[in-house]
Length: 327
Image (tube, rainbow, N blue to C red; front, side, top):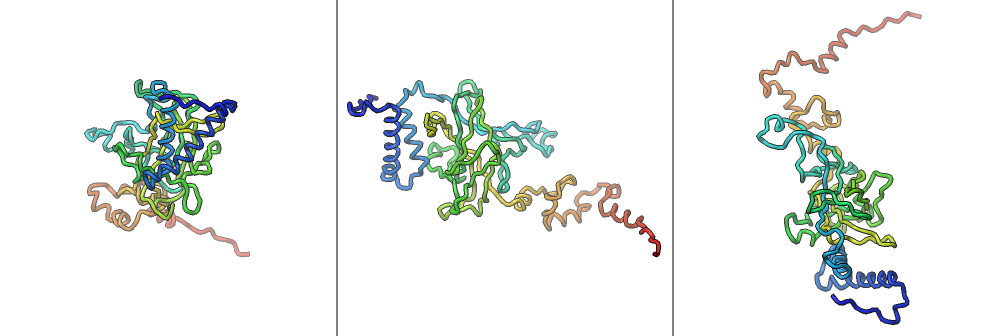
């Protein structure tokens, strides 16, 4: 594409300053022009289209940084074994190995750190499509934000077109939070993390509100997702998305209260090693099952089991109060 010559009157201005001003004006114009063509278009879609057009103007496609690379949410599963249903050993293992694409849990408590089901930390990996290995790119960062879980259409070419970021509630509270002292959510409600050796680790991020109580623009949302966008900064610290690296979106997840989460994850039969916080809300149905457990488990020798009740009765029966001398 033929470049537009710079007028003689502007040639005395520094090129970087002039370029930054022109780009800012174009972006300002785009944010007004785009809704005239497509009403209700999201800010994210406008910025993506602007950045993509800008990269095509500035750099030839064969030289664009990040070509052939993809970003992925990943984790290294802490559990061993396989996920084959025919494997007798692994199908009865309560700690099953996570699937390669199953990086997030289905449900979290508010203010709980987002980790995989196996409690492993989650990270974003930049992967070279040709080699299948992590790709190192200097100055690369990932921008993390929360989006409406239903606004992303998985497996569709238009999956990113209707993305709706959920940055702040109507009360002004950022939906995304971070416990790490070295990383803070910015004023817009987004988190920026640096990519080192092709990997950017999520620094103890969490969701500050629940799916059934979060409101933005008066609307509620049934599920959330995390979105990661590859970005770079210019000399002035301004961020620009790398359109050669498509954004990556996590699976859906819900956020509940801790009590509701305990009930959600409650197994049919509690394990004797379960923490008290898990047993505290077992509910009337599970309590009735425990009362009638001998009916369900048949030949189990219950007379060999020592219960807390039996131990307490034994202690009370053997207790003799100390006599005190009369004064």
